[in-house]
Image (cartoon, rainbow, N blue to C red; front, side, top):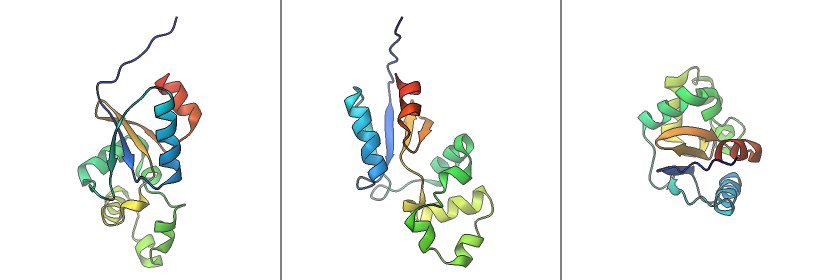
Length: 124
């Protein structure tokens, strides 16, 4: 028996030129999803939203330390990130350091990054 879930509200957060975001958007489109896209580079992001994501995934995962933006921060800026509050402050100033994409279903964050298996198991 196949059960199809209909999500009243799906939003994918990211930046359009990110390869990982492109892969996720392509997968979603190919699998019949048409989410709203929130470009946090253009539209910004709130501390409240970042704190919600941190509550779900952990601040260490929301902060992308493997990306170019993080690596370009000074050693002092990097060393100052010691907890969720300090991570959120850095992410508000440097939105490109947010791990992406983040997918929300009905206003709840459910996926971060893109791993096809995770998308398949949650959304199919």
